[in-house]
Amino acid sequence: MTDSKGFFLTFEGGEGAGKSTQISLLRDFLASKGIDVVLTREPGGSAGAEAIRELLLNGAEDKWDPVSEVLLFSAARRNHLQTKVFPALSAGKWVLCDRFADSTMAYQGYAYGEKSVPLSDIEALYKIAAGDFQPDLTFILDIPVEEGLKRVEARSEAITRFEQMKLDFHKKLRSAYVNIADANPERCVLINAADTKERIHERIVSLVMQRLF
Image (cartoon, rainbow, N blue to C red):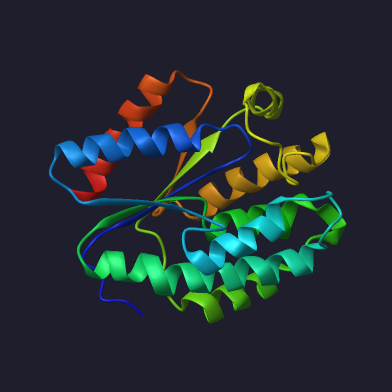
C-alpha cells in the first residue's frame, strides 16, 4: 500500500500508561539525530479521523456498542493512513503514533468480555482499511490498572468514554495487551510503565537503536 522509506512506530497501553510522554521524548531524541518526525494519534491524526474521534471519545459509556466502535475506528484509520501516515512514510519521515490497531484489538476484541467483537471480524476490517501494512515497532506500556487510573484522575483533561469504563474492563484490557505482546514478539515490546519516565525512555531508545538503526 505504500513504498515506505521511513518507519512507523506505535505506542500502546492502558489508560494512564504514559504514552504521550514517551512519544514526545522519543521525538526529541530522533530530532537530535536529524530525523524528520511526525507525531500522530488514533483515533485521529487527520481531519476526517479527528471528526470521528470526537464521536468515539465523548459522551456516555454506552453511546456506542463494540461493533459500532470497530466500524468507526476502521473508518478513521483508513482516512488517517491515506492522508497522513502513508504520505509521511513515503517522504522518508518517521511516524510516531499514539495508539493504532492493537488498541482496537485490545479494547473492542477483548475488554468487553462476552460483548467483544470476534477477533476475525476485527482482522478482516483491518485488512480492508490497511491491507498488509503493519508498524515497524510497537511499544506496549504496561502499568497496574489502579495506578494508571490514578494518573488519569490527576490530569486536567476531560475524562473520555473509555476512561470511565469499570475496573473489570481495564483489567481485561491490560491482559489483552500482554497477550498481544506475547503473540507478536518480532514487532511488540512490553515495557514496565511503572518505572521512571527517564528509565522508560532509555529502554525505548535502546530498542530503537538496536532494531531500526
